[in-house]
Image 1 (tube, helix red, strand yellow):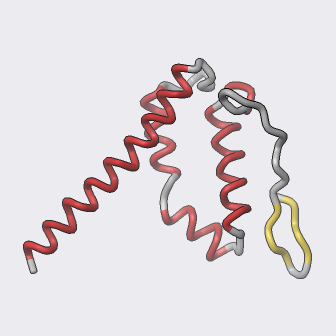
Image 2 (tube, rainbow, N blue to C red; image 1 turned 30 degrees about the horizontal axis):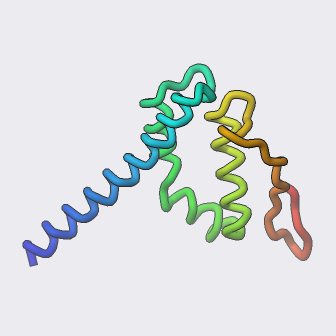
Length: 111
């Protein structure tokens, strides 16, 4: 079984490298478009995006706090826009701010 574990480890390593590569490309795009919030470098933004894109964060919001997948996506998009984009906008286009909500005891609660 040792060989299988090594193969799994290599696969996991490739997955993590691909995930970081995606974060790096996104941060590079923001830098290239000159919309990266002052104080962030392409490298530090890529590191932070990679750290925020974890299963622990998703589990805490969806499983522990009852967020829908849509609310999770909207919330992460709002967090990333407000943190990494100058003026909180979107690179290359403007979209109205989406309203976030999550299930509450018999009613929707605005986040």
